[in-house]
Length: 462
Image 1 (cartoon, rainbow, N blue to C red):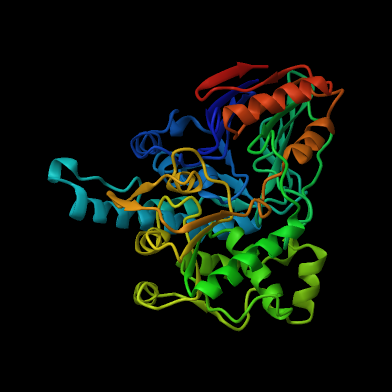
Image 2 (image 1 turned 120 degrees about the vertical axis):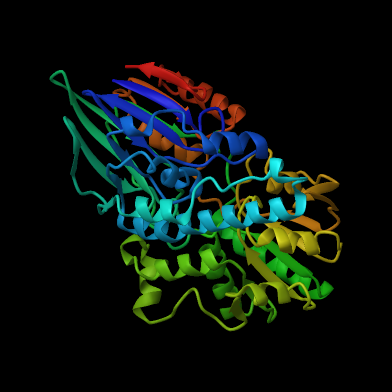
């Protein structure tokens, strides 16, 4: 058996790993890279393997850094893409949105920034590519055994990270020997709103484990609402605007749920809340279709017909015109918009129009990868580049880490140590090097000997 680490190795985005076993090639995730524009563009246009040689794809969840290159793959790959029911539904809207954003960004660049036809860029893939790949999805519910290929049985367990997210378990028979390989995907954390807690999977022989927060502890989830309420009260007094760059999947729904509770208990003053992301609106509708993913609190709300994603003062900006009008209106108001790392979408227009005003606020509620615009805002760079032009960052910047959908160091340790004593090899991926290396050192001290932090493009024979 051989494992190739093609993406999210030595970094956080572009999840892409391949298992070669019994003469078959199993691709785990096929995500887009996010970071330096030139490097990201090159990586996202050129897959590091021959798509036609892949036998089957298993997708852990719908985030674009895990799923976003599937349409490119499927130009030359005609096999199955196995995932959960909710992930398949989410990919139907998220991959179409990805194609749309690429088309619009290319159109804007070619019209406003390119010096001539020789500088023009093209989208990485088209709507037609997305339509083709969606016909290759096979949806399997949690905990159901699925024959993946010769000698390999797949089970997906709830990862508790986003709606439909899965821990991938491959039970393998190779040369008469039984082995279990576990791929965490993105592992969630306990007690986050809406979703069930992540499943602990024991008895792994080999494990590919994310390490996004491998050396950090999260703020308690309970303080997230307090910090959100304080931000709203602050901006309400200034009559300014809060811009929340928010992932359309999960983070937007969590923040809406928080606002629902805060308004219901009169913890914040009446303030207009706008969701300005066509994708986030579609994703919110999909949430209502998948109660199998809800925790008990969420199920109880729906049982009494209390929609957590709908409340007074909330408005969904569905059209381009309604989005543009928000820049003309005066505060106080809150605008949630994608993308979560400020790398594309409508949030760029809101940032461009509002970050120069010190009465406004940018509220960061999710992880920001290196070299993204979101990371530059978190690091308070005095000027940031948006649509090729420099803008002064004068708005207040706040960060709420408590909303993170990733397990922290304690959650990651507990997941790995559930297989201690049997675990032969642990590979730490999906983390910046300082996080992965610190986690590796800590887990060695706790008794797991064979731990490696692979680099992108590396392969390991087991």
